[in-house]
Image (cartoon, rainbow, N blue to C red; front, top):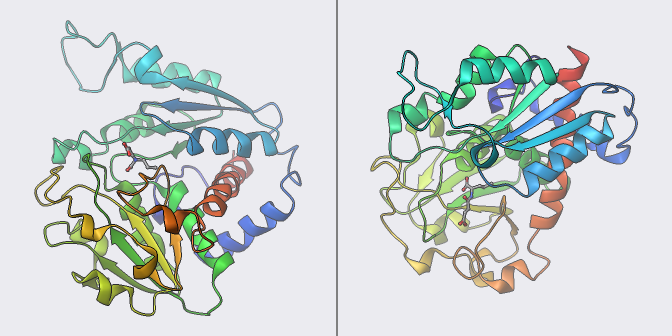
Length: 312
Ligand code: SN0
């Protein structure tokens, strides 16, 4: 594999899940594959799981990770072509990506959307510029519209925890005080569409995700109805897509409670706001598999890096 920027780069999700489970069973099996290879992790935004699990994955493959908080520590980067750079940006992505490519065999990038400029966000300005100007493989560690490492993790976790051949999986919106990206929900939707699951989405009206992504997936505006016979309730807040980046609703009746989810397992990519997105009683019970889910971040990343290293 050359790059991993979207769920569409997963050619066969079932075989990827099995490969990831094998890595989890024997994480150091390929510890010489990445020897003397460097991965650069570039963060334009905060991270806990992605930053640590991707380093852990690289170390399990014998790679050397180097990490930078680009927005805090690097020069202000310019992404527009032909600009007179007499403002706040000191370095163009053309030079930056070319330079970092000389230090790294793989570059992984996290860059969230503006949530103010839909056209710019959908153009995936940052990840596209790295794809264009870097000369090494690029891994998406959450971009404006997708979080494919998280989605692969989620697919692995559902496969590990399901008791049925075809479980019912519900993606539920939940309230949040801030405007959050669509990336996790988008990639989760794309992953579930590739898996053999009964998949439905529930959210208040006005919170429809990009219809090009949801496609034929059923959208049920009544959360209780959507949760009937659910095996997995995957929860995430996102801001409005139609009324781009706006918080239309913080209705606490959409919060996930123990009563609502019944016997279903609770999943969330984390970080999660307790008693806003989900009540303590869920997170502090066996219904929650968020910790096990986060552990799988390492093996999802390790599988992706392994596939890239094998094609270097
Ligand atoms: C990010 C998001 O895309 O929603 C990252 C998730 C992996 N989440 C947040 O920004 C949460 C911030 C907050 O204040 O709760």
